[in-house]
Image (tube, rainbow, N blue to C red; front, side):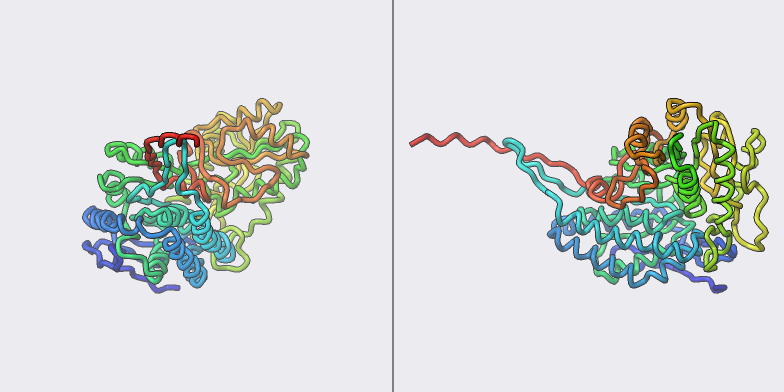
Length: 482
């Protein structure tokens, strides 16, 4: 594990293209802090070359039968499955998710999505008669994709798979923090034999490569996942060429336990939803809302649930909670924990003291009791930190749940689904888990308010990459009766 893997090239116009600049970007193993790989620091000129290649390829690719494009996606899905171990190992080391979980979540999920988008396209109604018009769906064009580091292969997949099968061509800028999985995917796509220029990958920094994609006049759409701050910058830049923009941004999701719920199951489920990927999940349930009269009971349940999360390196079989992705992320999370404590937060479990690990970007799984006006009730932490807030009645619970700039995920727990749904309908967020309902890869994923716009997953994510065209026909005169 001590050797450093060197990637010297970008993938442009169907071939590996040696980087123009000698500058490289280091990729760190989050458990050991060692440099595990380097990728080229792409230039604006290389991003431009990739966009022009995608533009040249668009007409031919979009004209192919849907079945042909779908068959390519099926080949890529099989390629991902064949390289599950390579991909899972890369992501476990880059991001910090324990290897066993990385196999199923970080790789198994994307493989399923590639095949599912092929299925969606095959069954899609591409044109429809509406009065004297035929309404057809057509690909939006060249798509720039900027993806994050927390679920890197998943976020890449949810953009480029539906874009490709819709008939678009793409330029991908993966996260510079976790790009190795993207390079492996590029190898898989190359082996699948897509025509040159249909898929392009340029590594680099957001202010260099990302801003070219956001501003380039030959990019028709930008699909971005990342922080709300960066999403605002992307939107501002893209507005100058009136691109279509989809944004999947931050979250501060509330898990609301109603008075009639099974508290043990609800607290355990919320802690698990918060700690997934060491809390580095935009839709993580990071605010636990409980009746004030049950606060002491919830504290004990949360402390017991947290104790089950064994901390350790991502490649250790016994680890349930790995490190954070980087030193900067660790330091930011520890700083926010300290901020919460300075504002009067009660430490229920964990805290700002780093665990006794010799290397790695580790943070203790932490539970804090806070008030609605506190910083940690509003700011996305993006680490293994759950905050507990109390409410007097259901109206106040809904008010607290809605009292953030975000609206991405959430949960409601009750003795009955009907009661939970009644409250869930009042919460302004893109998805709500009812009594522990599991994630559904075919349901729309995305948020309200400053959590972004647009949706991913299934037919909803697929349609984001399509335009409407209406063709009007002159009505035919009615035939005379005999």
